[in-house]
Image (tube, rainbow, N blue to C red; front, side):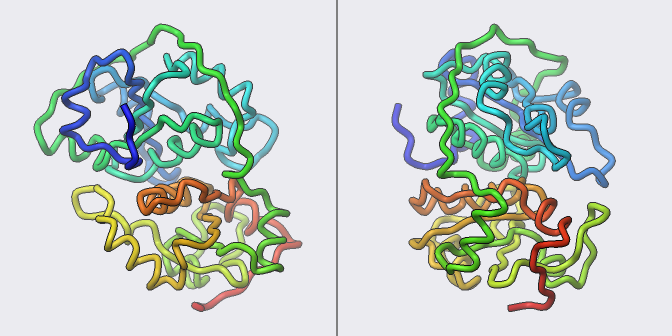
Length: 283
């Protein structure tokens, strides 16, 4: 089964529930201030057959930065516990429609697993359509996943700093416009407000429709171009902590770009240091 589009529909998934070749993951994650617990909501209801991917736990152990990409060996262990095999088609969704699932899509791709897609509209659309759910905690049979890291899909602070200095890659920020401009404070304490000099802004929410699905390709392309971004040129995405940055990477993948990198530390790292340049105001 060859899939070009990184998104699948609820109809597509409904026809494949129970397919042993599909590894269905609930990757719901909420901003800390939301006061919601993703694990509890998964246990209350999830798409039949889905297992829970904990974005915070399946992450790097050696940093205080939130949910940084895990070491490949650790990621492989976690993926095997979730029942993922080398040949699995990984389908990821989240409860909000389209928010945190792209982060896990990017995680798997950064670990060399190209057979990963996102459920367009997620659990929210699934529920509106009256489709079945189940409750409880699912423990799958362990898989045999192996990680083959793709460092080309990941940028660290020094790589982003070099790209900004050389103008070699477009830096695209997914945060809301008022946070990008510095008019609104960051939700995480201790971070400066503003953006990297030379960065562009395309708020992630502007790419998601009311039903939680991604905009069609023509409107996606128009949104990137309106933000001053050439979708055909090198792009590195960032946001507050690498979650919504992955949604921008997903959107570009839908436009045929499967090589877009994510700045993993994002503003949690850049905005929390004293040796990084920060500017305020729109561009």
